Image 1 (cartoon, rainbow, N blue to C red):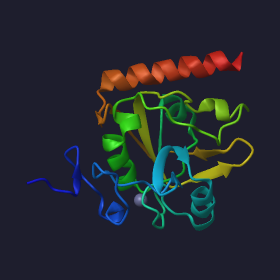
Image 2 (cartoon, rainbow, N blue to C red; image 1 turned 180 degrees about the horizontal axis):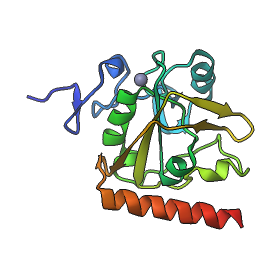
Image 3 (cartoon, rainbow, N blue to C red; image 1 turned 120 degrees about the horizontal axis):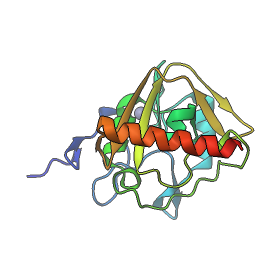
Length: 186
Ligand SMILES: [Zn+2]
């Protein structure tokens, strides 16, 4: 018997149980856009983004955020403390990094309409970074000109292909991110 509340061996957070599902059982996050009743997880829902910003709701489950939020991004985001994706509950973020195909397989194409080319936006990983970092923060602010969140992480959790990354993988990702950011400064 399969448990419909488990995806890839990971339990769906209680907060996400009320979300609509894809045919494979995957909860459809609030950030997805909809066209003719079909969810598109590669395009951000601009209407929901405005809602999330105004009411401080989670990017995944849509429920109210608490004091601590989690941000998901690549090594450059983790290094610079600059994230393009909206804040989420920690449990929603940890679920997403273990099951989201974009994160687990590192290949899905995703459109990111919020990014522009100013200095701060260039701190964000545009291509799929393959290794992802969940930064947990109680302090953050939104930078409207760049369309990014600037955060001061209290804790960082790293995932590679949906599993916790090793210290070597994390060190490698951090070194590459730092080198890339340094090279952009010139
Ligand atoms: Zn949530």
